[in-house]
Image 1 (tube, helix red, strand yellow):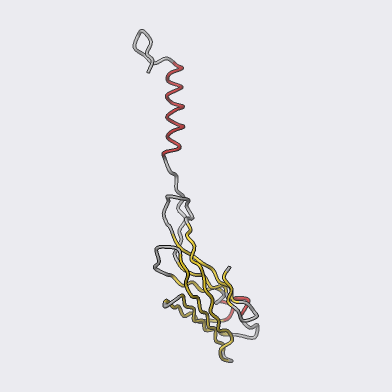
Image 2: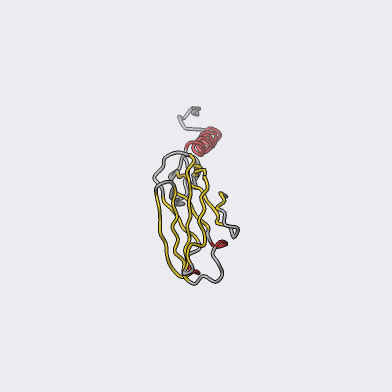
Length: 143
């Protein structure tokens, strides 16, 4: 550091120190947002539900973890199965839907759980997610 004869910083030295501190400080300080996320698989089922259905019972599974959801057709359009996994990998998704008329959908597909960091690298949370879509053709497709 440069001092003048009186022992004080020069204006140039102070500016250089401040600039260097700000530039390196930005590289060292990580700013994380506060977005939340949960590990699991989302089942988008709206396209596969018959228009005539008034009530819907849904059974969605990922490997051996299952969720049941029931209600009026208009309220059941998406189902989420929360998982406790800590790495990327392949899982089996299965979806069964039943109306008053019986089983209207039953399909299985492999899904790849992918790593997501919604607040950026190095910021929590780190989650593993996949989405599958039930089609009107009776198939379950990973998207």
